[in-house]
Image 1: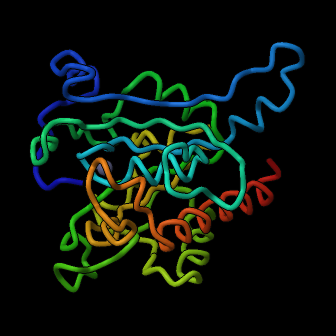
Image 2 (image 1 turned 180 degrees about the vertical axis):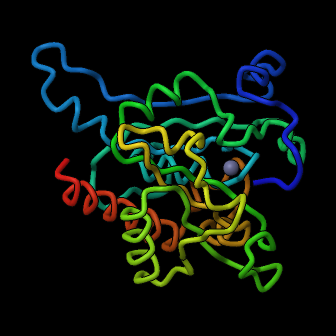
Length: 245
Ligand SMILES: [Zn+2]
């Protein structure tokens, strides 16, 4: 999350003033209701992954969302399992350093598609980016960390255990502005009124790619990228079992 106030007070405000295809793009996937039977629809729409500030706003969150949701066409790798989840991504596509204006905080994030998708889900997870120096625990530039927030306490505990067990510096945060604990935060608007979010430091996100640029990021993912993605996906599958989804 950027320091300072947002330029736009809502996504409605942003969409009225910015141009799709020039300043931003959005992409999403929603599993289809099967016309014949409706079978599996609820299960297939139970998981929602999101990058509200993707593209060059909080770089790397787009690629993490796509891979976690299981959509890795054009990537140099793929997850170890083939499940796919619903997702929504907003990409800032202005020149570098000119994308901060496109950040609308998650508690004012009223995009209608993202809102519809989260409302049909039972487990929701968003990817955000913060600077190396924003976490209270930071040791300065170069600090690699995955801060876990949201109000889904059991899911957060599972993610913390699994990700730290895999060797990542991942921990639950209660730090104001990074903890995603507002009920109005879009990720907490699922059917259980409880979601989870990551705040990933700049150095952490950069460490997942050989070349950390807009065009090369998804074709230079490294083993840490896939370990991170697969650990999250395994955590989601474990949580589905816990919730009997
Ligand atoms: Zn963010």
